[in-house]
Image (tube, rainbow, N blue to C red; front, side):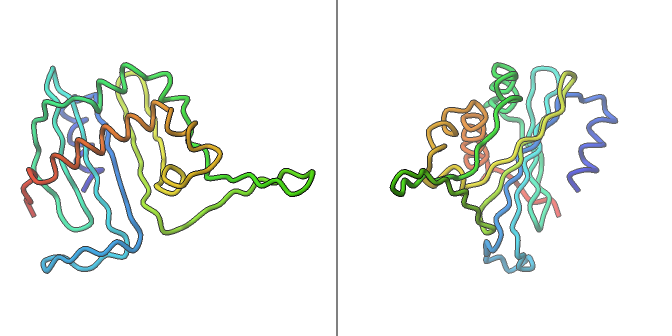
Length: 173
């Protein structure tokens, strides 16, 4: 659904397009009208035409209508911090332990965490950025570094916006 909608936007000469996707393995949705999915996924598609920004929601079960949004953080924050965001990379959860004279570093991974993808493609760039809760929420030697990234600030702004908009979307299928 998402890719065909993006192609439709491109066919209408819309050049500023991006999306925010969040998937959570093992997340249970108690919805009578939708099969239980092992991985629940929400994607918010953003596009800009002229000075108007729109967002459309897709999830594991349904497609939702378009909304005109006044909070334009998706494009505005990105454009203001384009170079930093392109270069930002979230570092993996890593801990340091000192044993005697040795300093040991441990990288820790988990497979059941919420993961996010932010993608934007406009006239200048085509970028895809990844993050997950584990690397951002667990205290580790990269915690402060990660939270000072423009990418993480942008992600938090998008997450706040999509959380606020969630109740406004109307299901269309």
